[in-house]
Structures are given as C-alpha cells and as structure tokens.
Amino acid sequence: MKRFVLNVAGLFVAIVAVLFGIPSLYLMAAILWLIPFISNLMGWLMLGGLTCERSLPLSATVGEAVPLSYRLGNTNRLPKFYLLVRDTLPRGMQFVGGPPPLVLWPGEEAPAPCQVEARRRGVFQIGPAQIYSTDPLGLQTFAQRMPLLSELTVYPALLPIQESWLRGVAAQGWRGTASALTR
Image (cartoon, rainbow, N blue to C red; front, side, top):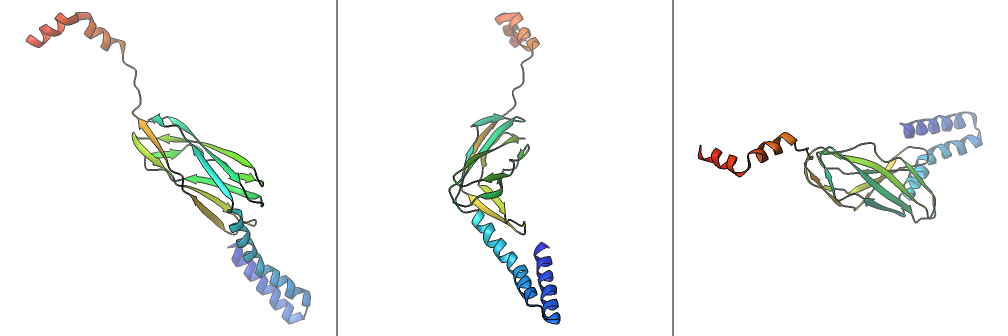
C-alpha cells in the first residue's frame, strides 16, 4: 500500500511538473519513484552478515515453559534495525511470548530470550529459524533462513504418588498379597 501511494504521489508530482513547467518537481517525482527501489536494496543489505545461535534445554515435561534463547550477531559494517527471530515449531508446541525485536550495531551480539511450552510428549525437532527484517521505511519485509535445528524431548508430567497407595500395599506385607492371590 505504501509503495502504491509513493507511485501515485510521484505520478501526481510529475503531472504537475509537466503542466506548470517546474523543473524542480521533475526531481521530486524521480525521488518519489526511486524511494521503493532504494528501500528494497537497504532491506536486503540488512540481512547480510547475521549470525544466529539457539540455546535450548535437552528435555522438558508436558505443560512446562522451557526457556529458549537466541544469540544474534552482526558481522557486517551496517547496523541492523528491527530484527525479529521466529522459529518453526512442530505441532504440540507453542511460543509463550516471542523474542523481542532487536537492533544490532556493527560487531555487536545480543540475546533474544523467549519461552516455549510443550502441549504433548515426544521428541520434537525445532527449527529452522528465520530472521525477519524490514527496510527503513517499512515498505517490505525480508526473511533469511538460518539452518539451525535442535531437538527437545518432552516427558509426561510427573504426578505425585498419594500416600494411601503406598500404605495400602505395605500394611499387609507379603502375606496379604499371597492370600489375595489364592482367592
């Protein structure tokens, strides 16, 4: 939508420049038409030189919120604005508050913490991660896939053993169980 508005505005300024013969309006129309292309180039440059690492525990239980953390780094000379990390989660897992957007200056590393909750048990493969960035004007979103894969083993939730269950078996000893089997 923003790109359409910039093109229409450039067209309108160009028409006014032709009708009234104002040379400076030609320059303004050209600038309005070049903004989307320059913004697109800046968006692609924002994704270059990024590194990403994921840290995740090896196991969890059903219903437990597990800390998941990303470490993003910028090895490029350009600053990176409004970076978002999103991971591919399998069915049965969901984010409990995603990682916040980041700004990375050249040579800087920053953590992006979040939590993941497992709804079912099993062995889950998490990843690959994707880093999203927008151009400076927010005209387009760009994504870069990071080949990070991690595995999380989710065990069933532990339930406390009631004391009456243990006391009932131990109260009769071996004789109680033997007489129960003969009946």
